[in-house]
Image (cartoon, rainbow, N blue to C red; front, top):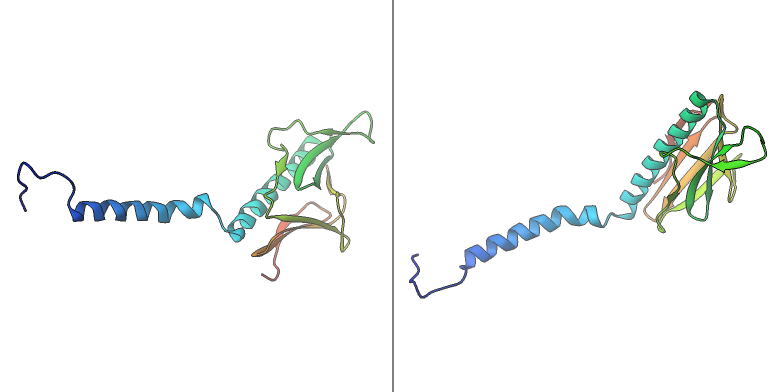
Length: 160
């Protein structure tokens, strides 16, 4: 349909095309901007497993003792002082920087079948000091990371 020179504005079709484009953009963007509790738990657990594997590898290949502490909703890494074995210093590694968990994620460290508040996982040059389970939970999902005495780390299957 031809417009006369005096008509101005948008046609209904043009407005509908713009609305559809905006709708499709929001459909793609909203899940990334506002992840579900389940997606949040999966992301956090994958990140924690990767960083714990890195700490284990740095301890094994660097000949150092590295600890991961879980307290006050955060994960921090420390290295045992070579001159004073009773002293722990914050890790100087850029990859092992502190991480604060989302408020929706509940973190529990289980050692010997017991929940241990404010505990740490210690990585020795020969493996892990003791087997552990690290549980990351939200109302939608619980993910458990298990570590054995020789330093193998894996996701532990469990009920959803």
